[in-house]
Length: 107
Ligand code: 2BA
Image 1: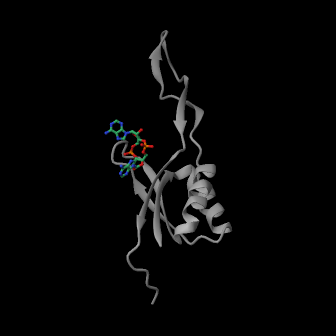
Image 2: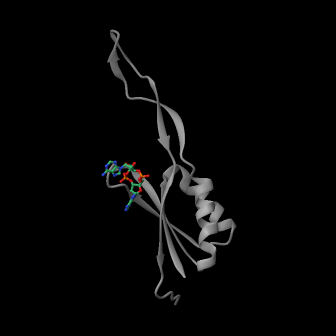
Image 3: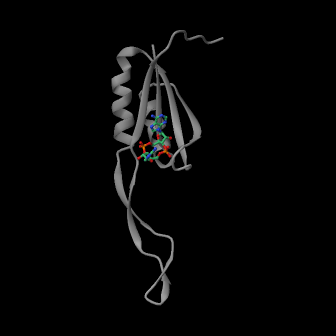
């Protein structure tokens, strides 16, 4: 058995966990914080059989694709007035760890 730890953006966490649940994976979601940006993200925990790991990674990847979004930047002073300019930011993506499970017990 393996334990999958997938760190995804908060925006993608709901669709990732729904897609996994639909395919009969058991899922736990934890609210976590990235150490570098100190922004919220979500860590998804999935315990599953070895032969179902690749499929789970594929599902997580499909639901959390790295993409570009246009967002308003914070207002800055320019040409004699305060203005907010749209900027392109990268969102999404997943960081995935797969670890061996020594023991799995449900009481
Ligand atoms: P990613 O590498 O896509 O990582 C996204 C989040 O995944 C990280 O959030 C962290 O919560 C987790 N993560 C990634 N690699 C990990 C690992 N080896 N062990 C444990 N958790 C891990 P943040 O730490 O807030 O990082 C956000 C983004 O900032 C990263 O995106 C990366 O592009 C950049 N970054 C992170 N650390 C950096 C550093 N020391 N120097 C430069 N850029 C860094």
